[in-house]
Image (tube, rainbow over all chains, first blue to last red; front, side, top):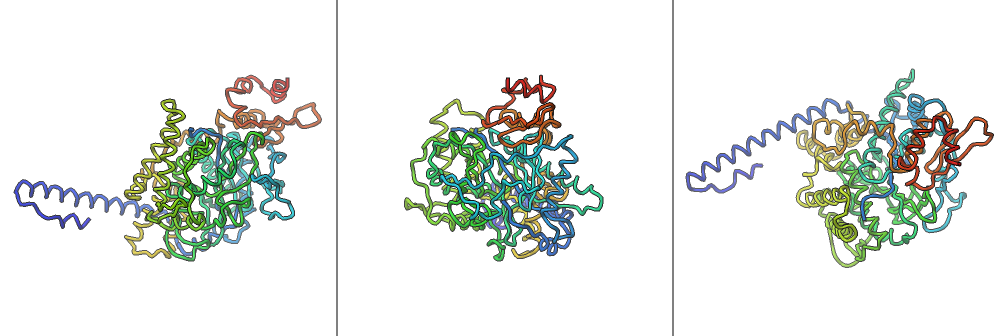
Length: 65
Length: 502
């Protein structure tokens, strides 16, 4: 998302205003996305089995079919 | 020329006894199946009828001898393992060391999703029932295909095909399709190589376990095209294409497209509609290379000299399928066929643009997105146990623990069906195949059904010395239209049998 700020600025005043609005939008959207990701990961953290290493190690299957 | 065809799935679930990694998986699987049977099946429990099974019949036209067969290929000998037929027409049983659910025969992709999802709920209820046995340790079930330590178990699809289609044509056109279809229906996997010794993410749970192009085996030297040929229908007219290369999918769109796309390709093969050669060089190695490339940029080399990505190769099949449907059906094409074509196109277009757009539809992308978020937040490398745990727990069938289920609950993965429809499919059979007759007989005359299978229902009737076998060799007969009124009218199995044999 950082590259959004690298866009060259336009010179006219009107364009400035439009540009600012866009940037605020992007920043807000990024914040919303970050919050959303945090929320998912927090929820998943709550249900993940504890001690990942032991849990994964003890999942041993026989072949099937 | 449409997605309509007699088909179904069979899924072996991963199983572990909580806190007891050394527990015998056959025993645990039997406990799960038996607990479900005891808690749901009324009165007498019908046996599976093995008379028509021939797992060593090869589609290329010969029988493998029993002496050279691996013991794991002998599935027709009733080894006393748990095995029940459900009122929805499905089969719930123990196959080797896994509980397995086979859907009843259905006629369209959405019904495959419905009865496949019903299977997940049956397994969930079964594991809960097993946990109620005093002294039992909780048994956890996973809808996945590998333990990432070298073992793989299957999620098979079955498609009824016309016998008159030469098997070589099926092989020729399906191999490139299977090499590339994983970009849509892979379930995603953390770990590369059969025992997961290399670190990384790949599209498919199964790709690394396939070693040859064509063969009869399913447990060793797995082939891209399996030649097992038990049609469970008139063998003069039909073959059953037994597809073993797919992953067990949780996302409904993944399952829907997997069988829908495949049904469309089979229709073209039966119609001799594919005239171009889409075959790829080194198909087994290509299958793995596509799976190991979540960026979807790997170039497949075709025998005609072109190089295409797997997504582009899928687009060739899509384009042909669209032409085929337009050519043969035009404005008469049914809505589900058109929906599969549209979704297939939409998914491929977005995969080519940015695969992450599919995180709300396809299993492998949903899983990869979650893994990436963890990697970004916690700085995890691909060998981190937490990422392996996320891969495993994505497939946990418990709604409160399974990560697929948590994503659905949060509105992050789309569904095609509602809970009520899936719940009904746990008990009710599809109405447009012989599964209707099988399921209704088990529901209504449980006391009198001695055994059943895909192609028969066997009655034990009062006053008759021998068992009475009603063959159901035609998958499209025994539907509600054929026998619904008769089953409504007959209060006893005796009445039904008399009416049928009259």
